[in-house]
Every structure is written in structure tokens, then in C-alpha cells.
Amino acid sequence: MGEHDAGVEMAKKIRRMRTFARTAAKSMEKKLVENAKALKKDPYQVLPSYNDSYSSKYLGKLKKSLQKAHHFSDDVKKLEKLAKKRDLSGALAGTLLLANAEKAPYLAVAKFPTGDIAYAQRGNADKEKLVAVQYFDDPMLRLLGIKDVALKRRLHVYSWDGGFVCTGIEAQPPKEFIDFVIGETSCSCKKGVATCGHISAEKLKTHASGREAYLRIQWHSADAVLAICEDCAKTTGNTLFTITKYLLEPRLKDDFTIQVEGQVIKQDDDHSSTKYIDDYLSGALTDIQLIRKNMEERKTSLAESGEKMFVLDGVSYDTDINGFIDALQPNTYEKTGLAILLQRIHEPLILSDVTPNKLLERFWKDHGVAIIVEMIGNTEMAKKFAALPDTPSEILELAANYKQRQQILSQLPQYPSLPPLATFADHIARTYRAFGMKKTIAELKKRPDNPKGKSLSYAFLLAFDRGKDTKWQYSPVEIEYGEFLKGYAQRLLDVQPKQYHKALQDLLVASGSSETIPQH
Image (tube, rainbow, N blue to C red; front, top):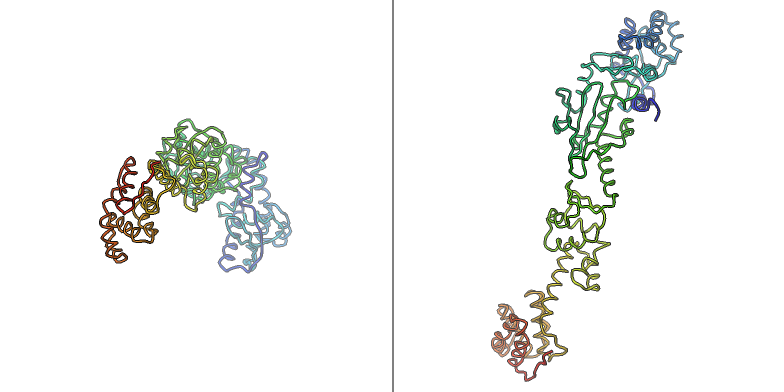
């Protein structure tokens, strides 16, 4: 942007307009005619007051041109001729025609970002100047009449409900103006400090920042500072525009310092620079957009640093994996998976409001299989687990349980082959140790379809205290024999691994078999 970039861009927010005509409402027509009559009495109301020689040099020229138009305020023909001029005097001449006609049946409508403005199109004056003259009592619209001169000659102009002042080449906003524009914002002011109410004056004075971001606007010429927290900024629009739509300054950047205060990591020496200020000054960004874009920029910058670092909710754990994991408050299975995952990550990890499962999901596609392999030591099974439609947390629990079962079963004797009845008993005992009673009871349905097999199945049901529910399925002989085998079945389920082989052999003998199980 050039020399007058900020002031010009912010001014464009006011001047951009489209026009169309419509029949005037009686109330609007009356207002425009009354304003025109007021200018017939005092045409200089369209200009700010001034006391310095610099302002007088340029605003004095405008005053003289207005004086000429006002001199012919009762001469319609002369006014019609003067109204052909495009400058401020032409706008005044066109408006004075309204005062003489005392009617304005048809109005043009200019569409501004701040709303539609109806005005009387008389003569060839610029639309902005016609609006400014006809709304000389509007603190924002009347600035349009002198905007071009003020920006070109580096004048400082302040307009508010109670006054219209030019302070020349120096920025010197009157106290009444400062109070007025701050009152137009969402902030309340005390001793030059205006906030939304959620940021302390002490924090503003020291530029203190934390994880909670806020917008800080230092208005130098007013000796005032404004601050809006991130939550309040969602509804404030562009606070700088709210202030500056009532003033004209050649370079807003010289008078206003815009800062987004907020840290990605809580530390005292973090004073990150604020970016996207030109976009904010031009009105392209709102308060909340400026805050969020800067905070995202800071997170991205930290993430791209390439250094391994763990940050959660603004707190840095540096490379302390255990501390970072504890802060996430995972369950036992998630903790195991996260410990493996974080050893594999060699980049900054910056998170907020995240659950352990969400963190696992973020890296599951790339690291899920490797995590499970490290847990259970079986690549093929790890691929099967990772392919399940469950959440990472649920899969880690399944994998942990699988590992536990494998450890249990690895302690039992391994048999290359067993007699059918011993095969059934061994399957039931191993299923119980690996999966528990519920799964084991379902497996009992796979018993050998003979009296000995059914008796042994009933014995296990009795050991699980489930015999009453299924007693009707067995013959009296099978029930009697099952009751006899109950103690042997119970011992096989509970015995220590070193005594497992003998317990299985004893159960087989008690079942009526003379076969000997070879110990492997």
C-alpha cells in the first residue's frame, strides 16, 4: 500500500455505494427539505470548525466556494447552473434547490456497507458529496464531503454527535470525541483503558498475554488503549472501523497500534508479532478473524519449527512424554498406546481440548499397526486388529487382552494330539483361562455327542454353577456321572500350570478312559 493506504482503505468502507431511485417517503422527504432549509441559513455546517492556519489554508478555500453558492440561495436559475459542478459547492447548490422547491418526490438510494441512504439527486455533484451535504447532521456521512481534501492535505478531522472539528496536520482528538467513539464500541472506559470487561487494566498496561487471546488497540493520539477478549470479539465486528468511521486521518497506522496478544505456549517472553494488520485496517477482517488468524499462524510457526515438543492446552511439556500423557488422563490401554506412539513422533505436537482417543485417531493410519505390533509382538494379528472398525482405544483394549491371554496360555503344556474327550476338556479349560466363563459356556455346546462327552459337559456346567438351567438336556445317567466329574472339572479350571497336565490326566481317567496323555 502507498502513503495514504490505511486511511484511504478505511474510508472506502464508507464511500463504496450503488444507487437507484425510488419514490420518497413523506418523512424522508420532510427531513431532507428541512436540512436544506437549515443550510440556507448556515451553509458552513457542512464543514468542521478549525483554529489553526494549516486547516484554514485548505478548508478556507472550501468555505469560499460554499459562500458563492449560498450567495445565490434564492436564485433558482443560478443555483441550477452552480449545481452542475462536481465539488462540494455544487452539492450545496443542488441541495439549496430543495429548500426553494420545498419538495423531493423522488430520491436516489446509495447503498453503503453501513446501510442504504436516500438522497435527492440535484445537479451533477458527486453522490458522496450530495449525501454529505444533505446529511450534514450525521457524524459519519458528513465526512464524505471533505474526505478527498482531508486525505490529500493530511488533515485530521473528528466528527461526533456534539461536534465536528479539524485539528490540522496534528492528530488531536477532543475528549468529547474520544468518549463518543469508545461509547460506540462494546468497551467501557476508565482512565484511558477500555475493555470488554474480561481483561484487567494491569494486563493491558504490561502487554501481558496468556493462552486466552485478545485484541489490543493502542490509540496513541487519544492516549487510550482498548482490548477485547476472543469470546467477546465474536460479536464486535471490526472495532477499529467502529472508531475510525467517525474520523479522517491520512495514516491510521501511525495513530493506532494493533496487536493480538496470546501465546501458544505459556511463557513470559513470548511477544509474537501481529500479522494481517493491513487486512484489518482495510476492514477485510473482523476482530475475531484477526485474532484467530494470528493464533493459527503462531501454532503453525511452532509446528513447523521441526523440534520435538509436546504442548497441551497452552502448557509445554517439552519432550516429557510421561508428563504429557498424564495430562491427557488416558485409561490403561490408551496410556500404553500413547507411550509407543509418542516415541515414534519427531515433530512438535500442539493440542487443545483433545481426548486420548482423538490423539490416537490422528496418527492411527500411519502408526496403528506398529503400535499394536510392539504391544503383542505379532505382525499378522496386529494388522487384523488395526483393520477392525472399532475406535483406537477399543482396539488397544482388545490387543492388550489378547496379549494377556497369550501369556496365560503360554504357561500351559502344549500337546501335539489328545484323545477326543481330553481334547474337549483341554479346549474348555484354555478357553476359560483366556476368555472367562461367558465365552466358555458357549463353547460347551461343542461337546462330543456321546454319553461321556455330555457327562463331562454337564460337569463343567456344575463347576460354573449353571447346571440347573440346562439339567433337562441330560439323561439321569449323564447327570449322575457329571456330578461325579464336577470336582475333577473344577480342579482343571483352577489348577496352577505346573499341575495342569496331572489334572487333565485325572479327569480323563475319571471319565472312564484308560489312555495316557503324553506330556510334551
